[in-house]
Length: 302
Ligand code: NDP
Image 1 (cartoon, protein in one colour):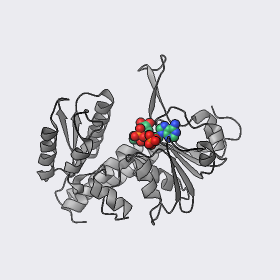
Image 2 (cartoon, rainbow, N blue to C red):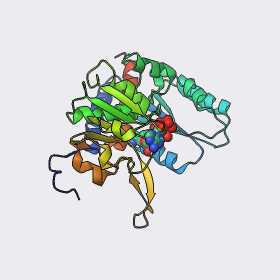
Image 3 (cartoon, rainbow, N blue to C red):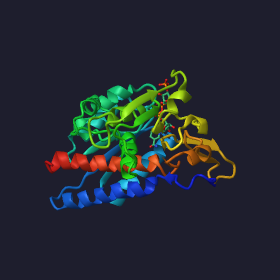
Image 4 (cartoon, rainbow, N blue to C red):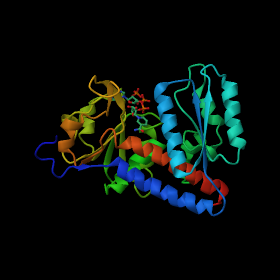
């Protein structure tokens, strides 16, 4: 329950914005169908990590809902790097597959970067291939931007948040989230042109830095790490974190919380994303959007 002073706070509804993205996908899929094209996504799961399986199943379900051809490839945890790369190469050659995603993390004996580099850049809908990273850094829109950063940007633009000229502080510097989002929001483009600061575990005076943020993005994987005193009044807060905490009263025995102490921080903000129901739902929607984009670029010559 939010207290007095929260009346102007906007809850950024990831579900609603994701639905808008999916509606655009449906429109594009219908348009492609007129030319006999059905976008296709191959998701490769190695081993039996429960969280990875949940993500893979959710992606498969969403593809089917939208009418995207979905191929789920499950490989044993002991699969060799060569076998995994051979599977990827098969998908590279398959014209009905527009997007290839290898669910991370991979078992330790496999070199993740070698695996990512085996994916054709034109089918790398996760946007992790060095060619796509370079395209993002060079502001070449023909590449693929990783889904979570793309989802964060869309949440901001759809909520009418002014990004241009804003002081954006991003907590976390992973390629999957923090560093990629920094590259994206500093582009000379619409929905970007921000002044970006990236903080990480070695940053000094963290709270002083976060308090300068007009837009604060938390992507560190530490439950409720960001407290009210770390946030400027009227800031916009995007919480990327997904952390499981034990809760015997919850159906599954755990609950998901973000990297932001939502109850304490929300009343100070202009707008904030909830967890769940914020960035997470956007990530999967942007994956669908990237797959449709790939089909358009590869097969419809858009
Ligand atoms: P990583 O573990 O790869 O990176 C975490 C980053 O946070 C690192 O850069 C690390 O710094 C930094 N960090 C860790 N602790 C602190 C600290 N105390 N102070 C400042 N910085 C810190 O995580 P990911 O980027 O993959 O994920 C981050 C979170 O986002 C997780 O909760 C994850 O579950 C979630 N996530 C959510 C997605 C979604 O769809 N909503 C998608 C992907 C991730 P250093 O580099 O110095 O180690």
